[in-house]
Length: 262
Length: 265
Image (tube, rainbow over all chains, first blue to last red; front, side, top):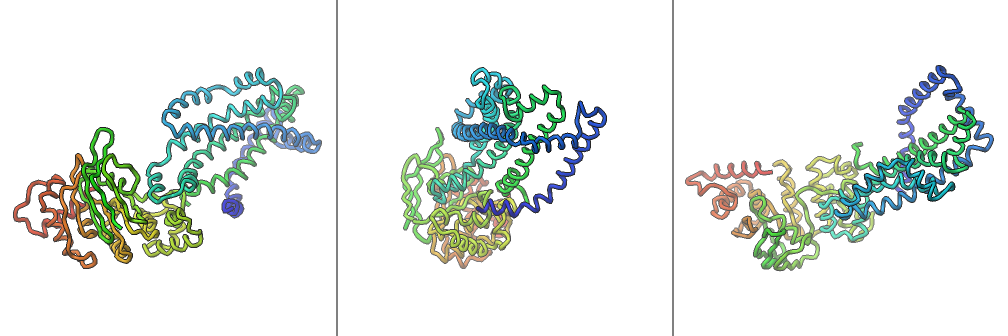
């Protein structure tokens, strides 16, 4: 509840601080436009053409259903990896043996290119929802797992003594001593994994499914419709930016308030 | 209400850290354990606080509400000063409004400002963090305070202020105090009885009573008593000081003691 109130109260100041970010975004748009003037609309459609095309897609009712399907797959895979990665990572972090043993496995998982997982997933699950969901899951899992592992490994023994000496009940030891520490490691990992899930799902859809943004990209590529391709890309990136800066970043600021000097 | 330690021994792996410790702390008494670094003082305090289990002997702690102050403040970095002070109250289920009121009262009494109470530990100076750590213990109205040299990192003025607050607090409540320190002046200032410890394995090698009531000790008396205490053979041997100094004046001894106490981390 407090978190929610702080979130709303922080919005004006936060939005004001966003001018700098907006300025750099507009810089990027200007460069993009410059590039399109040099190479022409067929190779690189400018921002204006792209957003007009995106508006047309939205008006035609084509954009939202595809984005919804893609979002559902990305979030399903992300939620699965969030649950599995957090729980398993914490458990592994509590035991020295388990954390030492899991390190090389995680390195293998991180080093494995997502496209390789996609090929395997295609062989195992065929063309359907399961393939992108699995690819997202397997790509996000090690990121979250490592975050949770480090959170658990770095728990402070001195604070454990404080909890013991002040006779904190188990529930309070977890909520007041362990959880805030672990969350400060987990939360950045979750955000990194969410960004990853969004990228992976489009790649998986491009090769594996008949619908979704990735599939739409494949179609526009087949039609050599660069403007439509750019429109889809802009839609995907725009959604991610919105989610990141309107929802996740303020929560992160609130959660990690105690770290940064105000 | 008594704390009774009998035949206590403790081992870490193959090393004997403590051997054959006997100790009694009746209600209202203040005892200081002094000894060189590494003589097992902190381990003894951890055993008494119940943070570790002894390898041998027994600890009968008859006190109902013991509270610990550690060498570092050990505050929860993600909680404000106020919430840190209220930690123990929350643990025993005091309602939020009530525990925040009591924590704020105690924080202000220990010299924190209202604005400090809403700050996170990293925004507070070392001295302020120590005050928060003391307030966290005092607010529980403990009948036994266990102090593990919580003042060792503070400057002289701050120390004097916190000693006064501490002595006032335990006198008002007739609470018992067990202090660990290697600062002999601190021991002389705070305690009714000083126990000298020696290392390898940690054991008690001397016991000294201080007769003057805690409230009536002025600085002159403390310097003289510390100097006399430094001349005790067991104390000189325990801290590895060179043999008895012949004919040194009391004042010279006192300043030497103060210098040494300050040099130690």
